[in-house]
Length: 461
Image (cartoon, rainbow, N blue to C red; front, side):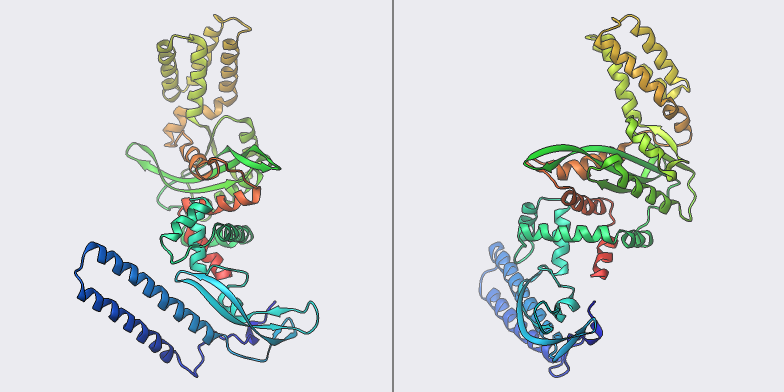
């Protein structure tokens, strides 16, 4: 570890020139160039075209002044000294080395003092890089955040195009990908600290009195050799609901997402952790888990102790969807009869405590009129089994009476907005690590918890 106490790089400007002298010189140059620009404006007719030219000139002027100011300040910070000490080893000054940093004002060519021990393979250090948090980096922190923010929404090439409109010079697609890889690794390493910062600065809304958890799978294109393999990624939501005028009203949601893994193990661990955090020092009137009908999902949920005291609800949309399959199998080409029967039994599920039993009884009656070995008969048979297996999770009249939502809308939206919209574009294929880095950035962004995440990483730099 580097001992910053003996670094030659001070966090104070050298008194020899003084801060005021440095600032005064930059200010004089800025004043001269700005005066020339204003005089040119005064001497010509001002039109929309001239206004755009003036704005462009101001950007160029400010960028130039910014680069000069930063470069001079860095030079003032990097004070000369013969040696520095790292882990008890004395390193000697070996000269200046040049590095290019991409800032919001354009590229900076930075000369830094380098130090190295004696002998082959000896330790080396560049104090200025460490003090500025730029060791191993190309982009300054502000530009790196812009790149990460853009990459959470766009491909690397699209991010380049966007940043080229806002910066004097945009980072390359490769530089953006490298930054996302490094930031993604840091997020994994510092997740506990990030969550603690979110607990303090942006906890789930305190207004609602219902905690609702949902999770689901969504197929993602994976890179396996030269082929694309579709594997199931996981998405999860932890939401706060309150009672609105028309029923349960979602007030706040945290999104989670993981690249494909066995049993959604990491995703469910993170969901359980979020539940514990949400319940800390707080009591909810209701706590529910709402998911679709996959056996694997409910089996995975049963292994999480943090979810055992929840009301478990089968998403009403999936119940209705399965009932529609039975309706089509029973009535065939008679779409009107199928929709009429489906609507009656679907509504009955929400209005009658015996809605499941009524639906099962009706399906059994109609199934007797179908050929026993037909495809249609098997569809109805499977729907009956589905309803009987999930009947305790389909007590919709009870759930509605408790004021609970009965649909997994947030997690369905998360599957589309978090995973599909970013990872399933034409030609895309992902490694597990590469996809996870993007998903982590995207979930913090979509959860509106970007700032505490980024600030935590910045303080650790």
